[in-house]
Amino acid sequence: MNKISIIGAGMTGATTAHWLAEREIADLVLVDIVEGMPQGKSLDMLEAMPIIGKDVEIVGANDYAATRGSDIIIITAGLARKPGMSRDDLLSKNAEIVGPAATETLKHSPDAIFIVLTNPLDTMAYLTLKKTGLPRERVVGQAGILDSARMRAFVAKETGVSVENINCYVLGGHGDEMVPLTRHSNVAGIPLKEYLPADKLEAIVARTRKGGGEIVNLLKTGSAYYAPSVACTQMAEAILKDKHLIVPCAAYMNGEYGLKDMFFGVPVMLGRKGIEKIIEYKLDEDEKAMFEKSAGAVKETHEALKKLVEF
Ligand code: TXD
Image 1: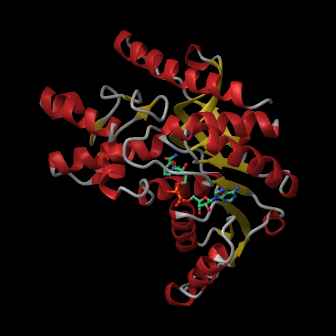
Image 2 (image 1 turned 90 degrees about the horizontal axis):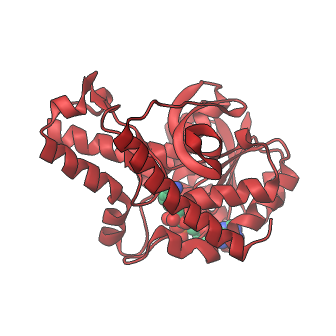
Image 3 (image 1 turned 135 degrees about the horizontal axis):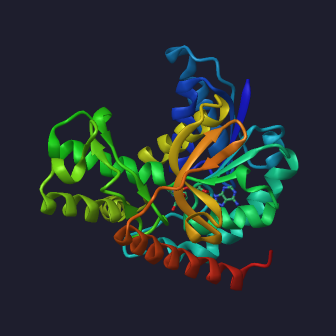
């Protein structure tokens, strides 16, 4: 059985374990600093397995020894947004948590692939790559599947068409400058621009960009976790099953899309080696301008990180 360790057993971490357990693709370890909490959640989930008929080992721990030999490490440890906060407001506190979590888990699982979720996402993935020194195939950030799923959900609601028929691609940084690519998005092959009137499409794009904030404002005590965690589950499954699945994820740029030494949301092919390929779309001038704006925002956060942490 494959093994996945999830660092941070809060809302996103525990819900990821829940989705993963249902798929029966790996034994699971939940790690958190809160004493008893990862153990309690793991035991509760383990006791659910007979009902759904899944043979999955689930354990909780407060240290990293239990993560030994993991195929995948998922990092969700850290603070989440509250109303009025941007993802970048989390930078310094979460850098202190994610850096050590990455280096310590790597010691126990030298072959693991890292999936990072903690915000600010692109910069926490960058920190993980720099701190671990891993090749870029083995560090991937979750954002684009979620942002695209939000857009798909809004399009499905607006059109009354099944979510299965709706393909949307939201690229760029995981912030308000993210890039919903309406030209590449479609309803059963029909371009969104043809299917929906311009004002409706614009409203969907705007709602997608602020999708995370909409939920933070409703919840008030934290941020979204159901959709983020199933997005992360899809990534882990694609990796373990070597699916060669093309999905938008945050990847380290080394010249692709004219970007270097930064993480950015682009279509990647996920398989057993992690990021097996980065797909480059041909962008028009408007799309290029949106990419540049979003990349500028991510670079600013990367620069702020470099002032806080030495690599
Ligand atoms: O799409 C995405 N990338 C995201 C990102 C979607 C959802 C959540 N996203 C981010 O993940 C969010 O902005 C936060 O930065 C993290 C975690 O969000 P979550 O909603 O799960 O927050 P919780 O419920 O507060 O859980 C965080 C847990 C909590 O139990 C802490 O005790 C734990 O992290 N924590 C630690 N665990 C292990 N090790 C250390 N050092 C540690 N520090 C805190």
